Image 1: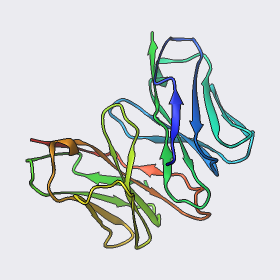
Image 2 (image 1 turned 120 degrees about the vertical axis):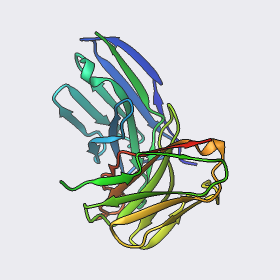
Image 3 (image 1 turned 45 degrees about the vertical axis):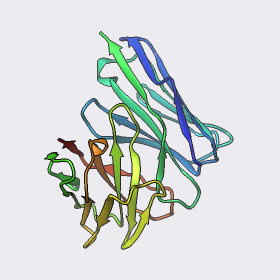
Image 4 (image 1 turned 180 degrees about the horizontal axis):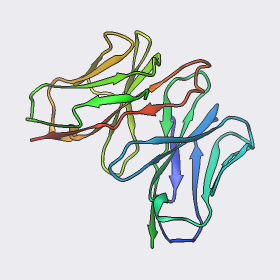
Length: 111
Length: 115
């Protein structure tokens, strides 16, 4: 069945350090979405990537979609305490309405 | 503001006592989803409605049922909650224009405790 894995599962960084989470799917995806879930909160949409090799930036966040559309990454430059939370990738298979969520990476930022 | 609303935010029930969780949306989205999320895990899709069409995930237990009486409302019924059903239940909506390319908007969730 469809599997979307993320590494690492947990990451602790000092404030100001960079952070990267990697997302790998067992099958080709039509798109990849990234969500952030704060502790005690619900997932909030960050961005969607559709094209093979696509790169998008949101301020300190850089998102990439792999050439084969089976992997993705999220990079945060100079982390801040407000970046704390769990980052999930999620992908659609072509023609499907449901998202397959990755296993998530929980980021802790130490002030 | 357009949003996804879930009630109640916290629900306590007894082992085996039926419980209903509700979700409403003002986004006029045609797809509504129910997810179960346990601590430190990813949201797990239980089922979704595409308009009135119900789509059950293969591994969703029969204990979980859903109703969507109209576009705005969707309910999750747990017929006989077990201790393993204690979790956060998230409702989400999306607008399906081109299938598989829509963003999901999540409600705040209902945290279910089973005693």
